[in-house]
Length: 360
Image (cartoon, rainbow, N blue to C red; front, side, top):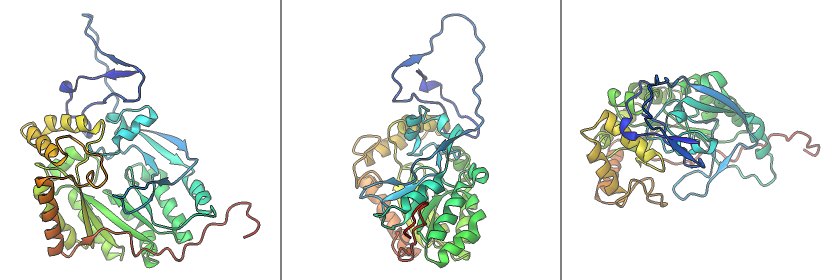
């Protein structure tokens, strides 16, 4: 049973992105709180991060989206403690009977047995080697990776198999694996993309409360590049009326730190993300809320979100086209190429020996 919440009562929560827990859209029933006249002391909601483990029976997630440059991804964790209020992955938490709001960033799921599951999948006779994308849904280097080290074990396994991988992160924890990633780069097996949203540290603290600071992410780009690891920048999400004015400065900063490629994505507000983001706007930037949502609707054919292929990542209309033109011009100025998975080495892939296979 889901408990309805009055969004007008949503308020900032220190260290968290969402301001409330929206209903789980799959819940069969919903209830709402009513004042019955009896005084009752309000219970305090614990916002400590909880982690539970889930045994994985499969590893790879497959897609046939023409918008994506990869067809397979791998996600070590469900939910993300970074707490980015705009995260398009938030609605997926409803599949585990959890809320896409506060639950998404405080009630996490760590997947165990992923290396073993991946080994079985790579051993299948019909498997064709193409780059695997790490962090297709949530950040593979979010804080709990320091404890579980699932991402590191996956990278070690992929290096042993000579299997190429791309990963996206906004965490400095990726530098822990600098030597490992450098060895993978020597075999052309890895590309890293660092996500940048804003250079405004104050905005970052509320928009992406537990992610690394903008300057820390630029340092990650610099150190990855110095170590010989191909690194690109993902300007995402571009939020009209809030962060779009920073596009040129973001690309300049990333290029000066050694980024070689760049791409961008417009803010996406699927399902419960739209009311979550609007509540965040009203709590932190009430004077801009109406303008930001108006510009978003201009880019989304009058809606808060458009899921059509070819439109969902970039939007459409005059404002979206202007963003794209500015991005292309600044990318040319700073010699940043479009994101690509091409050039990674797939020829040296060697499938792991399947347990019990006596004929290999």
